[in-house]
Image 1 (cartoon, rainbow, N blue to C red):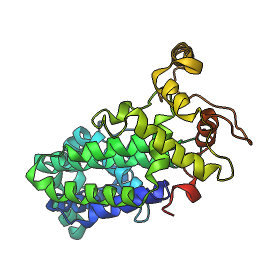
Image 2 (cartoon, helix red, strand yellow):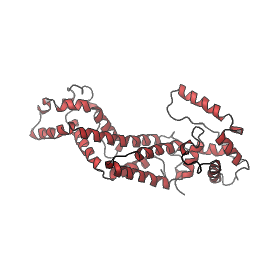
Image 3 (cartoon, rainbow, N blue to C red):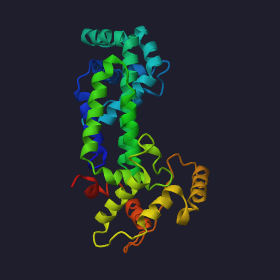
Image 4 (cartoon, helix red, strand yellow):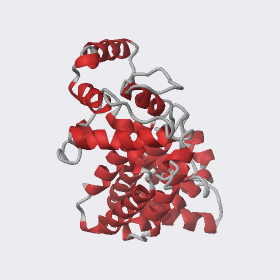
Length: 308
């Protein structure tokens, strides 16, 4: 996540497919099946269950891994209709012996339950990667969203428990860990903590690491980076503590969050709400540190989130 853009996800995907897990042998059959279906659109248009769908068969593009994800999703959606196709003698009505031989080689794939089961598992692997890529390519994506999204991605692959997924699990987790080790972790952690809807909740498993004193140290370290010519105010520690506990100057934070959540629900927003802070050119309080981090989208912050 050193640059927190979709290219980082692309690198993880390269490690995913690069592990050469036996499960990926099924993707070759899926690609062959999709290629064959493209050559049979004249049959598909008249088949029950296929009317109006023949042109929606998606073919993956070598340079766009997300196109393969979408292609496999569409193929899985058409599984029932393909079973009908495989049992219809009309698939042999045209073509030469070579094309008939290709058709005969495709029918067993369509009728193979293990093929569809394996393709479903691969789709389930690619789905969180595709979601992560889609989120992080948005200019509106925030650093706290990047952290939470990659955390969910790590958790998703950590939960793989099938022996034939061990290579996949190891490759992806190792890749994610490598990118996290190269990232400027302070900025990501602070962005999550300074989102009032998150604070330290994502880090409950590490209560000592994210105790108020540790959070203060983290934010003061960032203050010195953001404002090297302005010393952190003497009230900085107290203000950080008030923010975490929603006391003092932050006593109304809870009611403000409730109002924002209610407004977001009324607009049918499904993403986590976000509270904006005014920017300050001349920092005086901890809120100025909130403002500075709140201005960052992952793409804008590339210069900050790489390891210095």
